[in-house]
Amino acid sequence: MKHNNLKALAIISAGLFLASCKKDNDVMPQPNTITIENVLNSKPLVESGTFKGSGTPPVVFPGQSVSFSFSAAKNQRLTFATMYGWSNDLFFAPANPGIKLYNDDGTPITGDVSAQIKLWDNGTRVNQKPGMAVVHPGTAETTAKNIKEVAGTDDYGNTYLAASQLMKVSLAYNGNSTFTVTIMNNSGGTANETPFSPGVWAISYVAGGNLLLAEPIYSSGKPTANGLTNLSEAGDNAVLSAYLTGQTGIFTPLSPVLVVVYEGGQNPFFKTGENDRGEGLKDLAQKGNADILAAALKNKPGVKNVYVLKDATNTVLLPRIGEGAGGKVSQLLSVKPGDRIAIATMYGFSNDWFFATSGNDLDATKKGDFSSSIGLYDNGTALDQFPGAGITQFNLAGTPLTESKPIAVVPNPNPFTTLPALTNIIKVTLQ
Image 1 (cartoon, rainbow, N blue to C red):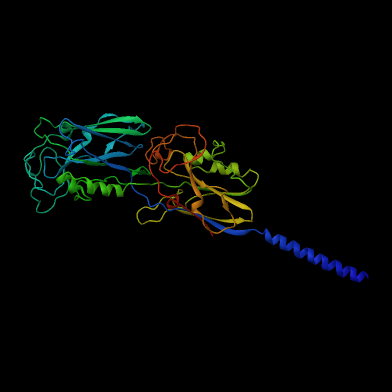
Image 2: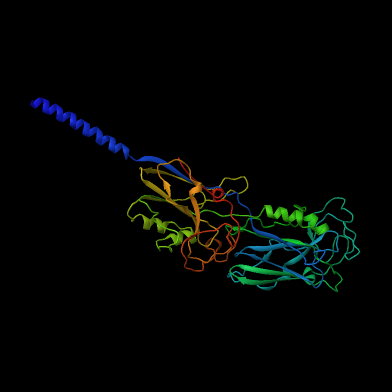
């Protein structure tokens, strides 16, 4: 009887052991690798546009002016081009890289900036004596010449006043990184009286202190390109405008990425409709610094692991530039059923926008592409400006201007620009 009892006890014990093993297996950690990529096909120009006179034809006659507005950050430049209408192929444009908009101390430049404007020869037509009698398009150069400045006299002995005596260009600062430029035709009554054609303008992004497209319209000493001939010979800005539009769009790095593995029902560091909690999300959203928030989260209940993922080469995740790949980071995770993953990374060329997982974050045990689960949020702690063209944007050498608003989804279109689909900017996968 005793032997039977021991046998029964052994069977029961074995069953309990197996049941225990089965229960443990259900919650054994499993590997899952998260990968975050910047997949943005970036553009070098943050803004571009056209201008024209208000009459028919839409030229700017002597005594008339035309104005347009734009946003710009420190170290960005304004460039434009318009035809010297009573010539064969001359055009006005600022000397490259364009009109300086801020002093070295960050204060905006205002007033007369005409001294920065030059007169240029496109090099595609034989220059007649400038004036109303010029025949268009005129005689083509036997061999096209490179673009060169017309400094008083052209290659055919025709004389010209300085561009600053024919065109007055002035800047007005509207606040919050926005300017209005006015181009006045002052050529009336001079030996070089002429209308100005419809024109084009552009602003290049700055990254690492350098303009991404420093000479978007022309390059002195090089052949004309991209539709500048149409503008300089016929005052037709359509082709050059189309080229500049194709170079205009979004450029932004993504900051080092915060990855949080937690258990529970709520994201541990933010919620829309609430103000920033003062735990470090502001530093991530304004400056791309995730370390402060990461340190705070490590002590929170339910938070299991916190990572800050940095690109090995650049620290930040750069977008795709030309044919190059964008930045990419990965992290092997050890997760269990019930674990969630939350991420956050700064929209680098903004005042305080950040990408983050939306809704109930990510199921840590799933695999696949979860890019559609990423939202773009305004942290509400810094005054917004045109992304990539704001004087107070931290990553463009600025100091953010403080505001206090609840965290909210960034609308698209927003008051400044239209962003591509977020899945065309940031890609998140679990494998």
